[in-house]
Each structure stands twice: as structure tokens, then as C-alpha cells.
Image 1 (tube, rainbow, N blue to C red):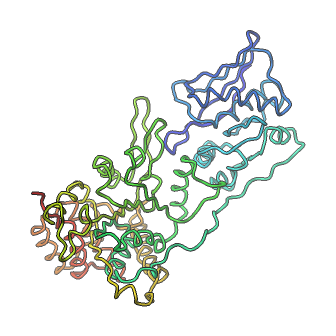
Image 2 (image 1 turned 135 degrees about the vertical axis):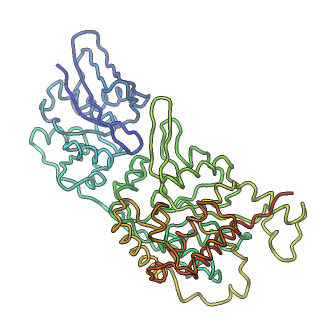
Image 3 (image 1 turned 30 degrees about the vertical axis):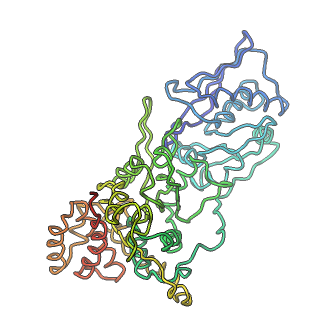
Length: 512
């Protein structure tokens, strides 16, 4: 007789159904797991054996065969421990044979029989809900799985004994409740920054439309401080965005105690990050920083210090909003609709753009050109806003803190985003909530400038030699500026300001 238990295998954030088949037959004493298991799955034999012994059960002196079907799908991770153990328990009569019908099971076992947390409980719960299954998961993941729906049955035991008692009717487990991560302190406030009023204005525009931003300035000008305060003016995640972000974080194992957070992600990898670390990949095709920044901010400080190939790997995600990782035996897709914020010095010495400074290595213009040549033109073409951040003077530093802080800016950003969300909802564009994500085909409808603005952008496109992508991004920024002003039509003043941010990106000196 074969005992069956349902579980899942993860391909990106998708949870594919896996059937755990357990058969106990007379013959040589052996515990065999087949079905393309990786090392972690193969080692589950010892964890299952020890957990069952600690729970007062002993494996029969027979041949135990566990098949993970479909057999051609690679199985990775430790979450197969619990379904294998429950399949063995059902096969030897330790729990009722039909107790596991209609449940999807995942969890890792400790040697003492306790059930420990695993990654991917939320995608597993979503997949179980679609199949009209309940879910059995570790207690530490119960709050996370409860977000899949209020009508899905969820059992979150601490140990095998507690779960067995529940099935026998001697102990009843309460359904876990969804949990939100408590707010841990206040975010850095824009009021901390003295001076840099034009940079703060640009940061507000970037936040309002989710536009990509590049800040160029000498060391100590406040570029990193500005970027770190961007989350304080961004609106919280919507319910749909919260679920999408949490699915990625769940697969990556980043949800602490199963609690979700409505704060937008802010990821700031070091410039030594590899391509796999930034866009995802590795042995098990894990999500990278770009996917972990989904619906949030990816901050790249010291942008030219990243490897050029690593930076260019972001070009496709910046356009498509997703990352496809292809392997010989499977393909994994992760969402990656992030807002890119980057900071850089004008040159390696950092001071070549300062008045009166003379570079010791070579002429200033050549120093600047060689350093900035590490950035490819196609990547810079995907930057909506490029600004120069000058050094802060002593006169600025001795001034009192500014009156306006993050709260006031966040209120304006929220109003602008609300206008955008209503606009795209009326156009039935699912998943599009900001101007940066607007399809180019709709720009003529929603961002058509007035006659004066149209004439200006036509002349500027020829003078600045804007690409089609650059032309569309100017219109998107102009639309955001109009939303901040509460206007329905993009006017000439909005187009002019949007073009000024584009002009900074086009002032790169040529290397000689």
C-alpha cells in the first residue's frame, strides 16, 4: 500500500505540487528517497528517523521507499522532512490514514521531533488555497501562511507529537492569525539634511512617480543621506504589493517570525556584489537584490565601482519589471519592479568638478571622462532623473534645521500617487500604479503636453538627440510633475523641468 502526502517544490515564487509517496514493504532494511532529491532532501532520512524515535515511534525493520513525484522535477530544500515523516507515520498507523487528505504539508524536523521554520510558507499557502487544500506548516510560519486567506485551514504545530494528538482528537490547535511586523523606530527624516533644496525637490519627484534617480557629486555632499531618507517619503505598500513583496521575501527566508511589513523594501548592496547577488541565480536560483527590492528601492552607492557587466545586467529588469533566470533543466522568473537610486562621485578623486581643483593624475576633464566611462550609455538612458549634488558649505551647516521634513513631503507624494493609481485603475491597467510603469503606448493619452510644451519637447528631442526611450521618460516625469501640482494637463513648465533633469545625464565628457 502507498501512502500519499501533498507538498510543493519552489520555482521562483511559484509553488508546484509534489506528491510524496511512501511505501513500506518486506525486504532488506533500507530507507530510500528517489525523485531527483538534492543533498538536503537526501539527508532528511536521518532527521526523520531521529525525530520519529524522539516522538516515541520506531521505523519498522522493512524496506521504506519514498518517491517524490513528478520524478523529473528537481527537489531542493529541507521542507520535505515533515511530509516524509507524516507519510511514514500514516503508513505504520501512528496517525489515521485519511488525516492528511486535503492538506499540503511542509516543514523541517529537528532531531528532537520539533518542527522548525522553512522558507516559502506564503507561496505554499497560496498554492494550497488555489487547490482548495489546507496547509500544515511549522508554528513559526503560521502567521505568514495565514495571509493566504481567512477560509483556508491551517495547522501550525510545534512538534510531531502535537500534530499526532490533533489528528487523534486529544489536542486541538488554534488557527494562526496574520501578523504585521511592528514599526521599529522612525525612519531617517529629510529634516536632518541642511541645504540641498534642489536635491530634495528631485527626491520628491522620484518618490512621486517611482522614477529612477542618479545623484552625482563630491564626497560628503549628502548623496547617501538623501537616498536613505527616500523610504520616509514613500507611501506604504498596498495590500496587493504587500503580498507580492512578501512572496519574494518568503522564498528568500527573510520574513522574521512570519510577520509581514508594509514598509517598502530598501536594498543597498555593496559595490563588490556579483551578478548572481544582484539579479539572482546561484546553485538554487535564489532571488537577488533586484527582486528583494520589488516595489521598493534599490540603492547603488558608488555606482561606477560596480563591475560593468553587473550593472548592465539590470538593463532588462529595469524595462520588463521581472528577471528570468534560465538553467539547463528549468527556468525561474522573479518579479523585479524596483526604483533604482544611484550615487556616484564625478571622478575617482571625487573633486575634479570643484572650482580651482587640479587633479594630480591627469587633466580634470579626462579624469572625469575615464571614471564615468565605466557606465554604459544604455544603462544611463534608463535613468529618468540625473542631478548634480554640490558640496554643502559651512554656511548651510550652521543654519537651523529646515522647517519642512519627511512628513510634509510624504503627504504631497501620497496625493500624487493617489492621482496616478486612480488614473491607471480607470484604464484597467492591472499592476500599474505609478507613472514610471506606464506603457509607452498610453503616454499620448495621459501625458500629452499642451501646444507650448509639445513644441518645446519636439525641439529638445532633436537638440539633445533623445532616444525613443529618453523621449518617453521625459513625458513620464512631466506627467509626475503635473500630478504633484494637481493638474490634469502636462504644461510647458513641467516639460521644461523634466528636460532639465535629462540634460544632466547627457553632459558626460568624452574620454581622450
